[in-house]
Image 1 (cartoon, rainbow, N blue to C red):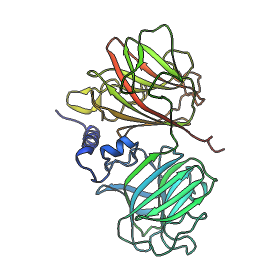
Image 2 (image 1 turned 30 degrees about the vertical axis):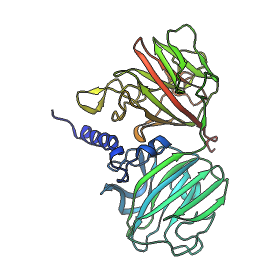
Image 3 (image 1 turned 90 degrees about the vertical axis):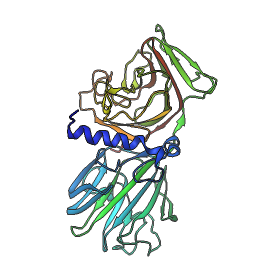
Image 4 (image 1 turned 180 degrees about the vertical axis):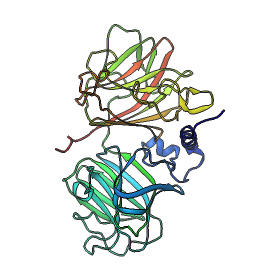
Length: 394
């Protein structure tokens, strides 16, 4: 079968993701344990999906890394905002380089002003490599030019830490920025910066299902689905169409849950920013592990992780009769999803405002709900955890 180039790279990326359990420790991949713990890949090792450039710097992917060694000043940022997290990244900078890892920053030309920057470079004596520029200095002498180094940045509320190559350099508090984008800086035309193994684990998520009963949830009446709690503590939905909704509502948030499809190519979904007591009224993250022929890069009916009726998943990562994890981030009019830590959608809702997301862009808080689709429905859900984002900056 002849396939287009876009299908080929998408298929390769999906295959890479599916092999994570077999190649623990390999570049730009997650282990089974990391997936279970909620880690997601911000960089898939092959494309810039989920990233966008700012400024004059020219970014590319080479040898499994994000690379910039040409162009002027600029930075590469995620298209998704994050609030509380642990971020891991490996970087390598050329001699005399001036770079940094931005976090909780805004888009635009000055992310070091609109957010935090972990400094890479010793050009500023007060804030050498590993410092949070303008906030907390690190001890000097830790930069190793032309050598891969490992950074871990935590941002939990106003608590910020930086660990470099296993040594904690910064442990401070600062409440200036609560949410924003993550980015990589290219500051000087004659320098080279590379980054790989960029992983993020959302923090501050709270359970919305207790694993014992349906407290905190409400079934929309008049439909056929049967919702119950299994002996092993999962929420199960069977039979015809149905909708069970949270009593709480969220606008901007990160949501993670585990899903198990008990049959072949079953159809379900996760609704969010939905209308309380209204049947199937919200944005929908599709659940359907089905693809055309043997090509996982061609999902059927948007595929698991796809934003139904809006953007198909770029590949079907998950399989039936195996637990898989969905991560959803909704921040303003931008929505992104990951399946088993691999990003499958990156969508911005540019439609006119409407109270019902089925008909237009909704930014207001709404319920989260789990769908029963048809008589074949038989799915289970566990580890449902939500982290509400702080209000967006002015």
